[in-house]
Image (cartoon, rainbow, N blue to C red; front, side, top):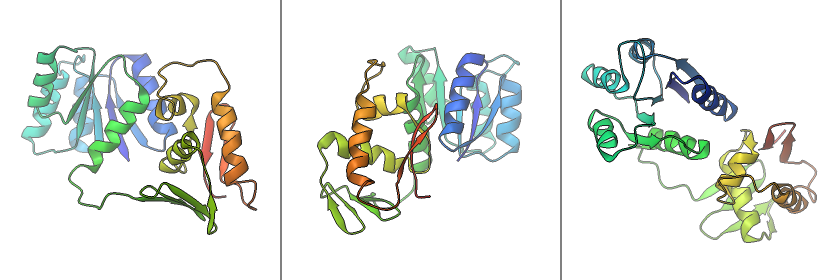
Amino acid sequence: MRILVVEDDKDVAGFVVKGLKETGHVVEHADNGRDGLFLAASENFDAIVLDRMLPGGVDGLRLLETLRAQGNQTPVLFLSAMAQVDDRVRGLKAGGDDYMTKPFAFSELLARVEALTRRGKTDAPQTKLTASDLEMDLLSRSVRRAGQKIDLQPREFRLLEYLLRHAGQVVTRTMLLEGVWDYHFDPQTNVIDVHVSRLRQKVDKPFPTPLIHTVRNAGYMLRAD
């Protein structure tokens, strides 16, 4: 996806832009409302991550109201420190599709952005995840590779499901802790390494081509070389 991030805080913008790029998205960044409005109005984006308080004479609300008045219906996720109910209501009434408050978990932001781009689509719910000769059936909770059944423990199944849903993308340690273990902090244990190792023993070791790869200093990636 092509995503526009309009955020003036350098640390927040750097964190969001880096994370979106690491997960395979093309990202443009504007650090003020005027430049953000120009980019949003003149180029095509799949989604916009928009701060409320912006320099440049155009705040987030005005930026979005201008876009909607022009007929621009690009999905917009507000990301703001303005967390009161009235603030959130104003953002949604201005045309926002979703509203997140700071501080935030990147995995949730990513999930919300991707959910926005799926809205309005009429595709049938996804019941199977595949990569190469690996297939996961979400209804029967079963996994097969090259036609052979693979028995997984519940946490292993959840870990593999997360990797399959992000196939071809780098999955960081933080993303796994939040997405698989529901941790919003690092417990400073090797729980991820242990479970990935066990998963590899079942999914990769009996087969000639490995699918689960370690990305040095980044995390893991499920891909077929």
